[in-house]
Length: 290
Picture 1 (tube, one colour):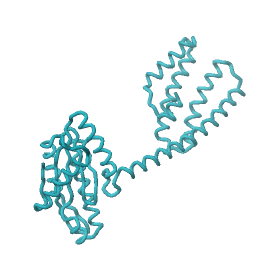
Picture 2 (picture 1 turned 180 degrees about the vertical axis):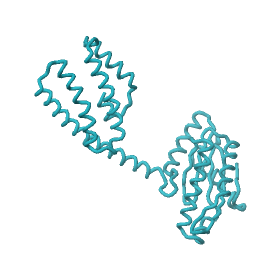
Picture 3 (picture 1 turned 90 degrees about the horizontal axis):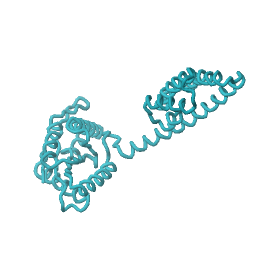
Picture 4 (picture 1 turned 60 degrees about the vertical axis):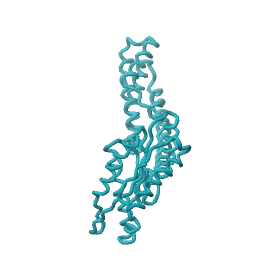
């Protein structure tokens, strides 16, 4: 149980641990012993503390960890000493061995915890855009591949929006690249917040410099057009302040749904991109659906 709590970090329902303790007492024929009930109760509480420590271990110093472990080990082993009439020397020996094991467990778990956090950071850097804090092209590429196969295999709706920021180069040239970075961050956060309010399952991806894609699983083109309009309006109403200058931006948008003629995700992407290009070539600041 303690191994499961520390190393696997599995939260077993506490009532199940109590049942396991009762079953163990029945199996050993000592369910009528008061000490067995006290031991089982202490063991359940120990499991709870062990699980909490395992999920927050990196915040706790070794002294606190060892103190909690020792605080439960002393009464647990004392109950064993009373039940089996062990000598004090045996009790002390078992406690020393236990603390050695606790130290080894702490070191091992700290290594595992550090390794997990490194992997989490690598995953974040591989899938998230550092500037805008939205998912990047690599994440988009995996997602559109998965959604394309799912939609084609189950005859499910799939739509996509592609947009970029109008005259973004002019923003960089006029106010500087740091201003351009601020525009990208604010536009991304505004669109992400708008999407979250509509449907938390819809994800925004930064797929280029000022280009973004949004994948809409189980959305037909009419539903997607409505969301695209809300995104368009949210950005249009956005005022970005930078160095005492207010910058207003707009976006050009392309919208399309998956077609039976699409043999791969790239065919789908090209059609959405063509609709975006149509918006840009015809005055920008508009939505093209097709």
